[in-house]
Length: 113
Image 1 (spheres, rainbow, N blue to C red):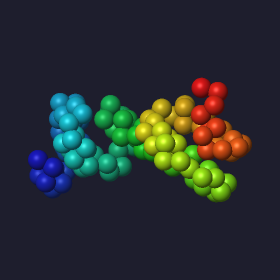
Image 2 (cartoon, helix red, strand yellow):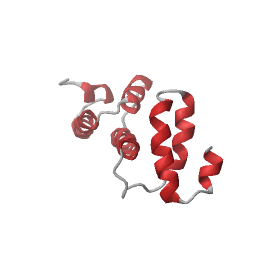
Image 3 (spheres, rainbow, N blue to C red):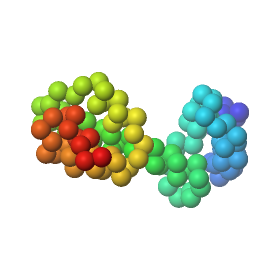
Image 4 (cartoon, rainbow, N blue to C red):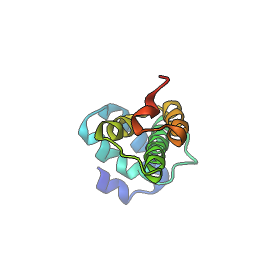
């Protein structure tokens, strides 16, 4: 289906992607299915396109937290790296981002929770 959709006009493909995506749930195939939808959907206000944008924002926020710690020359334990990259809550990531600027150690970005 994804091969067919690549050759389908975007205006039609987007609707098909939106109809099928909810039924895939958390199955591994859902990630493969979403790849055709990772094009610019900023004009499209649907649950799937919003979810994709939110995931991208969370991933970027997590990268920013880790980047600040790295630039500050801190050791980043694997547990910290995993906790940050596994988080999909933008508010929490923003809090950790602020803490990453001043925290004495990477682990201390999680204080005040």
